[in-house]
Length: 84
Image (tube, rainbow, N blue to C red; front, side):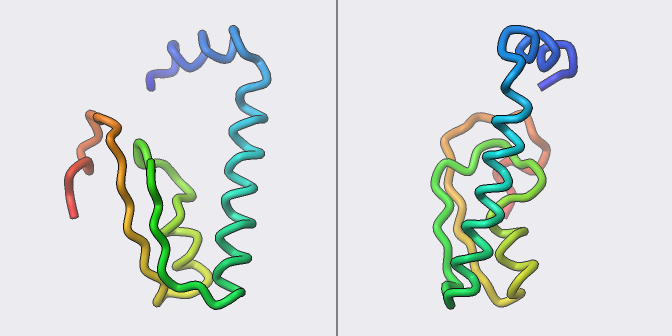
């Protein structure tokens, strides 16, 4: 998303940045908890557009042997979209 569009969205919903931070913090805690509980295989449905702090990054930071399969239907202009 370009910066101008992001600025307009935040203007309409000023609470959005905090909601996004809280959501990512929950994801980190949940994945960390699962890794600590012995889970090593993850299925990440609805992964969306690539960003920082994805399930595979979090899980593999705590255990490099963790495996994550991601799936999304989001169409993305990202240069990494569709790569394995």
